[in-house]
Structures are given as C-alpha cells and as structure tokens.
Length: 431
Image (cartoon, rainbow, N blue to C red; front, side):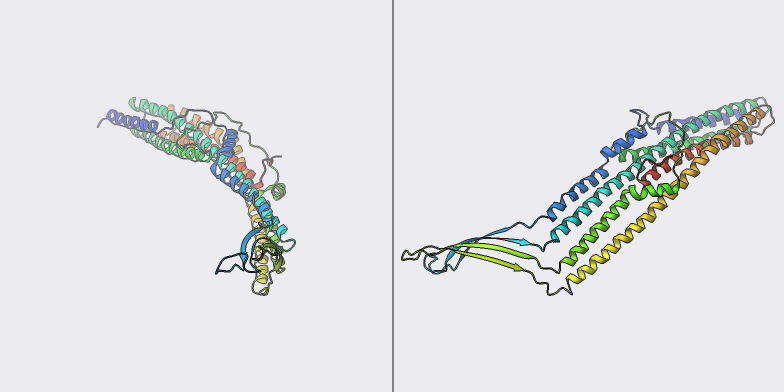
C-alpha cells in the first residue's frame, strides 16, 4: 500500500472522529450564568433548602402549643335517673347537670416544655442556615468545575489545530524525502488521542451541567453557558486561627448543637419536676325538677380538685431523669465532635487553597511560559532537521498537560474558597 493511500485513510478516520465529537457537543446557548446569579437562583429555587425552611417554620409553631394549658373539658350528665320510669321528678337525687374541668401542670412545667421546644425550633432554624451554606458550596464547586472543563476543551481544540499543522509539516517533509512516514503516523495518532480526550471532556461537562441544573431546580438537559472572561486574581485569606475564631461564633451547625444542649437541659429540668404532682380542677352544676307534689328542689353545685401521686417515682420519674441526663451528655459530646470536624474542614480547605494558589503561580509564571518557549524552539529545530519529530510532539503534549493543570489548579483554588466559606459560615474570610 502506498504512503499516499495510508495518509488518506488516516485523514478519513480523523474526519469521522471529528464528526462524532461535534455530534456530541453540548449546544452553548441561552443566557450567561455568572457565579453570583447561580448562587442566587439556588437559594431562591432549590427544593432541598425550601423543605428545610418549611420544617423550621413548622418547628417554630410548636413552642406556643407546648406552653399553653390543655383545653378544658365540658361534660353533660344525667345523675340518679330512675330506669323504670325515666321521670326526672320521681327521685330527689335525680338531676341533669353540666360540668367543666381543667388539667393544670405543676407550676414551671409548661414553661420548661415551651423552652425546650423553642430551643429545638432555633436548632431547626440553624439547620436551614447550614444547608444553605452547603448548597452554596456545591453550586460554586460545580460551577467552577464547568469553568475548568470549558477551558480544557478549548485547550484540546487549540492543540488539535496545532497538531494538524504538525501533520502538514511532517507530510510535506516526507513527500520531499526529508522526513519519515512514521512521523506522519505518529502525528495522526496524537490527533486521534486528542479527539478521544475531547469526547470525554464534553461528556464530563454535560454531567456537571446536569448536576448544576439540579441544584438550581432546572431541567437537567438545559444548556449552561458561563462567562468567557473572569477575574483571575486569587485573594489572600485570613490566617487559620482567625478562621477558627470566626467559625466558633458564625458556623450554624455549632449554634444548632448549642441549642440542642439547651433543649436537653430544659428536658432534664422538666424530668426533675415530673416528681411533683399535676392537678385537675373542676366544677359541675346539677339541676333538679320539682317534686311530684310541686315542692321546689334546690339545684346542686359540685367542686373537685384532684392530683396525681407519683408512687412509682423510683421506676419511672427517676429513670426519666437518668435518661435526660444521658441525652444532655450526648448533646455536649456531639458539640465537641462537631467542633473538631469544623476545625478539620477549615484546615483542609485552608491547606488546599494555599497549595492550589501556589501551583497557579508556579504554572503561570514558570512552567507554562517555559514549556511554550520549548515548543517554539523544538518546532524551529524540527523544520531544519535538528530536532526529532517524536520529541517535538511529546513537548507539545507536555505543554497541553501543563496548560490543563494550570486551569485545574485555578479551579481547585476557587472550589477550596467555596468550601472554606461554608466551613467558616461567612463570606468574610479574606484579609
């Protein structure tokens, strides 16, 4: 088979691969989605956050219910009614009556129940804030992932065009007898590998866009278009210990744990009061008919006061105190464990950001410019037969990898900032 036929076969293969890549390409249309607008849409439309807000609103309606006396009971009755005649005038004690009764807990119990419910409602409110920060972190991280994939796809496309030029150079040199057929084949192979990477990157972008759309409560297949230009400056963040101090007062999950401790303490105080009796007061009025002879009978009034007697306190109320004491200790340990996790999250985010920021500076000021100079020098040397074609291609592929790593480091730095803000519970983490 002649070299020309081999070259035409490779060219046809590349055209087919390019067509497949274009067929799988996501349409870039619609309104530009900035990072700010993405976070605003998520806070406004995300169903997970909305259901947490609804739960907090439901919890906020509980305290007043717990602090209110039970509803009074109204009763109607017929007493001493003779069953042989059902005549209300036959017997002296026959009466038709109505009564009212009310259960009254021992003083202080209602206040403690309301207090415990109020602390739980505040903990639910803090959970909303915590979910909001987690949502913002996920939205930002996914948005930056799409940003990185867009840049990686652009780099692949530019390298594809450059390698095509290499193919033309290698083919020209081969046709005039100054090059090797294997150089043409090698360049064609690298072009095919780039197309494979392009397919994978575009598939990853579609998946990331679907994840972002889900967070924004949009159809998963809706096109996501990001801005072409952004501020590429990475900020300086506060020292690690200062971030700890901020998180201690601003992180919602910690405040939620503190409210859980307060609620557990109120329940413990209530359990200690349960050994004291609750009361029930009532009044009833009985109306009597006149005697058969016409004499008037007096109506009757009944009053009552009852209370429960905790005679099984050792098996019931004392065990409830033990239970509530253990629950209080559980909440305290949970707060300490959560505080340790928060500090770990801050340290990891801090270290990841500093590492990624240093990498960005290294790639931007050193590695990428040097790699570009090397490629330019190798290309010039190859054109005058001083550089091997394999080394030229490898140098270009290395530049491609460095450029991709630069954008990956830049993306990881911004994702770390999003995670760090969520870990601290504030946006003000910069110097």
